[in-house]
Length: 229
Image 1 (cartoon, rainbow, N blue to C red):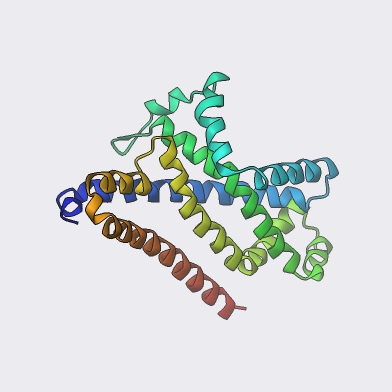
Image 2: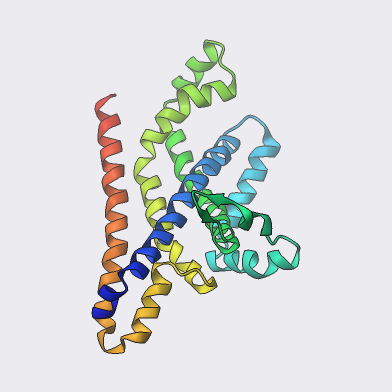
């Protein structure tokens, strides 16, 4: 316990990295998931099938396998992303490991976002799409202006569950050298074997806090738009 207080900067940096992985991967997976969901309900048969294949493969592949691909197989194929390490955002350099971790989490999570959003699209009454077509909207226009806004409201609970799962999945990055919360917990446990349980509880509470913030935000979002109906 004393070791954590004396090195609280390491504790904060670890959860800061976890939050960075969560926010970047969460936003990108949401955008890619929306795109995949639009393809899956779109009018082009080939794109529907390609999106379905992607979702099926991603959902049935363990996340750690995706990480292994980007950590070991990708560099051997020439995908090193070294140029990313030259980026300077607000005085911070983006590491190649951070980029590859975000890429793995995004590609994996977007499949689940797609399916959660597709359930929301299926909850939108068919008459809404027919009315959109009747006033001359194209497929893209009806999705953007009519279907997706309603589908997102309907899919808030499953989307929140996906983001909560993503928050916990960031711990997989610890196995690939990222000093996020789980990796830092192991560091403190190795240095304080007698306080193993206490260190575990402190870091577990950090994850619980992140999950509760996501749940609170989702509940507020759902209540606000539910009242506007």
